[in-house]
Image (cartoon, rainbow over all chains, first blue to last red; front, side, top):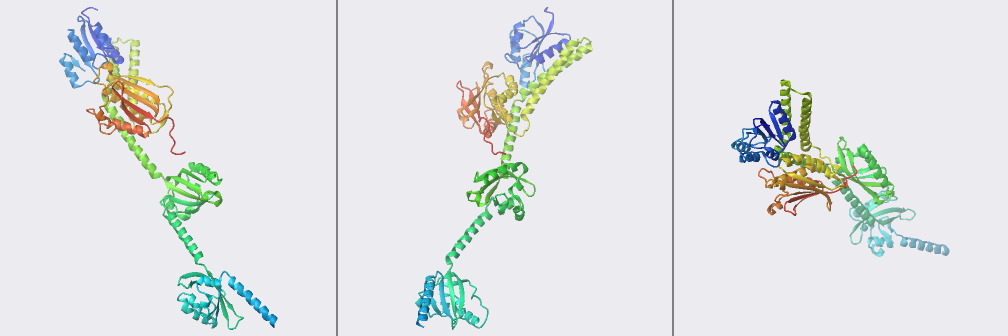
Length: 104
Length: 506
């Protein structure tokens, strides 16, 4: 994988959501990598990777918002799109302040 | 002559002896009513000595108006008018020496062969007999008043169950007229399904096996309405040889109706509690349903896109459609679980395993627990006796305790958020113990813990524990709070094991 390859990183603990999102993104002709937790993603993620992150907020272990903070700390500038089934306004505000591209 | 004179003397003495020994008073009067003979029995009855009354008019032994009319009675008779008393006998009132009046039976005969004619009165004091009769009549009147005024239905019946007497309360209860009831038997009032029970009870009564029985029966009123009555029947005098049965009928319909109403009220409250609990879980439930919907939407869009591009491999499409079907079932499952939990039910009790009840509630609770990063560990004892419960209501109590535990642990670090659920056989029956790692219940709150509208939650109604408490109490069990040894809260549900004593055989 070259640094020029743009990859969409899907991070969601729900296997069905994760796989379906991965298929959807792949059907659009984009490269996809899926992770079942923030830990799993953070282990492989290096600043050189390009693309974006599609991130679930509520996950066991490290939550989506915590992962977003961790990316900033590591100076990984990947744009983040949050998806969540039970978001609220304060969550969205916090995510956008940290630089999220969208909150779906 | 002298022989006949001796004979006469002897006969006279014999008659005198008979008269003196007679139990009844014997009084001989002449045509004017003057007393000639007054025997010892008459002395005892009237209190006069013979020498005091001989020569006096017999009217002195009577009260007015007879006393002053007596001479007239005699004159009428002697003048040829028909006899009113002579040769007939009747009950009249006498007067004793002390003025006391008393009932007496009087028979009067006429000694026609003597000249002038004489009359003999045979007198029997019936005051004691009369007093006994009056006492008996008063007693019967009392019993009659009790029977007629009793607030419960009463009857007497023959050994075959046919009514001899029915009281007004029974007539009112059953709606039949007295004559209609008297033409019936107990069995005619009893619904078909309960007749065998009645026959069995009657059989034991009539055969002398039991002197009485109690049974709950459904009887039909004249208007066709069914009553639930408690029939207590006993053979009179404790033995069937007396030939009749005394029955008491108590109407329990009203009581049963109010029991039913209070049960319905409790069920409505329980329903409200379930809806409230689910409301508190709404966000977690919404998430649980939203996940499969998100997956379905994504899979479908992906398939549509691939097919439009013409790059859809059949195998990938097949797998995607299979995934869509599976996710639709997953969403449906959640809805089904919620509907089973929240729906109005008739509150029927079933003999079930408490472990099964807890396992089924965990399916629903898992959604909430996962959403809040709470881990639930279980230790369910094998071979527990079964319990007779309304499973949905017990599920509700369990879910409520689980929700409380989850709420209590939100401030903890994720790895400390553990709820432990255990089942065991305890002194009070089959127990389920819920132990959380939260802060426990403050001592100030503890006393009011199971009262309504007590809450520590910002958005709580404070109904959960009070509803749970009343549900468990209605099952004859207990719900208790204790501090867990390591500091959290511990709630223990205890349910009586096995079948409780049935209310009746029906």
